[in-house]
Length: 445
Image (cartoon, rainbow, N blue to C red; front, top):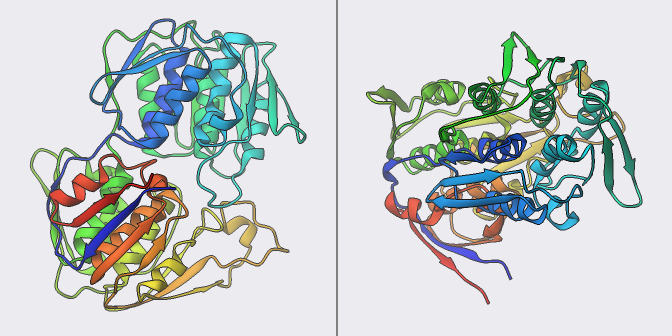
């Protein structure tokens, strides 16, 4: 049985946090490290579930990868022996799809199953596969086995424009292009997330020739990658949003140390719009303080630099404590409101609805189907005095938000299925305790 958190809520959250390394950067750079001819050392790698799963996956393929110090990871892909990703591991972590790149460069062909991760909507896998094919890679899917079989006859080259930006797709095409010596790859309508820029920076420091030109990424292939010093990945903006939302929703205050406000610029603007306090202090320290009363602010989710889809569950919790009514319109994924029914158990006033949208197939970033009934928005009425309850986690970011809701609520709560939360949050329990929250892990046999 999965472990749980026992939480006593209603306490004001105050203190300071040093953010962990970004999950969405760590997994991609770990995979990129398999392209190198020599071992790579990565710093600031968080001890989280998804990192452990990817380590196990890489070891199963024959790769050498281990923590050599706390948060310092050594990656060596020269010992890779298999070109087929184990179905068990592939189903547990979405980043397994990026293994097309190192496995194709090592073996010329590989087999990778449909990717795993949180079930927050139909992921646009077709865009990624079309991108691979546009670079000259042959890809065939077997509905019988659930595996994609890919072959690389020649080094990738060419042009591909994503119909709608794809975070994973952009990263995969970058990884497929970097070692394509004497060839050029152009990725148009590329995703703009800072974790992608971190990947580009890492590869360029190792000899890659990749640059952004507006919404395009242009990669000139090189013969090999080499990095003689450790590389520290960027901090986790999703984790920061979680702790800031918690502090403000409990009418507290928080300092975020060693973190660039550029990573969460749109979030900070929304915080200011509520009437809460946000300040940039010296040495990359951010300060947030709640007002006794703050107003509700509506928003739409969009890819970076817009308001991130992973942040909207936290915003929903914050809005339960705001004055007035807020609308959250989810444009990036369908099925992203699994947490709503759980919040209702704690007394939140939230209703699901579908806004009227002109040309929804263009407005939404997922593959909109006219025949499907959608509920892409919620209306939150606040402020509400939340109470304790027993709630269940369905996806990673929503899971952290439900833990936040329990810490805001008065009384006792049990949060089940916390393994999902711990896929992306390092040392969650102790960080909450350091901020004055009352939380304890319940371990089941």
